[in-house]
Length: 296
Image (tube, rainbow, N blue to C red; front, side, top):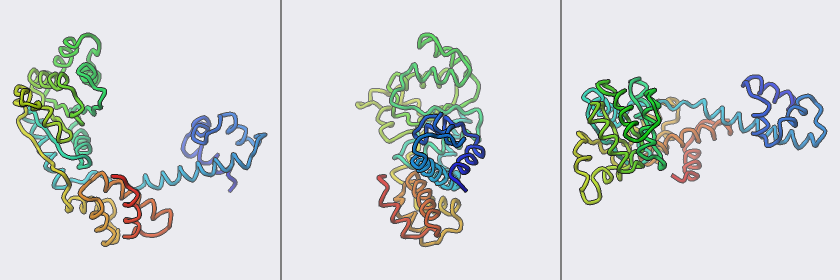
């Protein structure tokens, strides 16, 4: 099959526009159009080199996406689920903390799938109290304009006695005023509240000198996920994602993941990709090879 026909088939099969392909290849839309119609006046060999590289890259990505690392209800995941359910049903405020890569975000997202009335906010360092309330207002279909006080009234009006829960991921990013706004929303509405993040979140809630007693006192429960995920949990994830994997390779995946679920996820995808490229079964050597390339 010619590269031209291969590209035409790929565009048709994936519903792509010529402009999208052009951006990815690094040329203009007219160039792609001319090439597809056999009328490109420039260096055809050079354009085909770029297109061939693009098609290979896309197919490698598609092969990698075929590995579905689904959410696994491990022992750690069950602990998180139980405390989220407690906060939801009882309308309590909970703080969930632990090192990066332990599955906090994936657990919150999975809970949202199971509980459609849950509201999840994934914060970043740009969040202020106003941005936070605007996000909540938008999710609730409420008015997202006005002063901080007007936003608070709008959000509270939609949430009061609703029995819903607010899940805030990476809550350590939030400044004190935003945390105080969440406390007030929780107090006024009776909604459950979960603040999830890195260990410094606990310090933020207490205050450096313990001066934030009113804020910290609202947290009914805390769940410390610690520094790492148990090897038994990681082995369970590997077994579900790759049930036919060689036992030694699976054990090496768990060992080199070093208690980090995010690292394990990257390694699973990377090792499977290496195996497919080399048309071999995943092996201990491949696991070690990919582990050396990972920064975290």
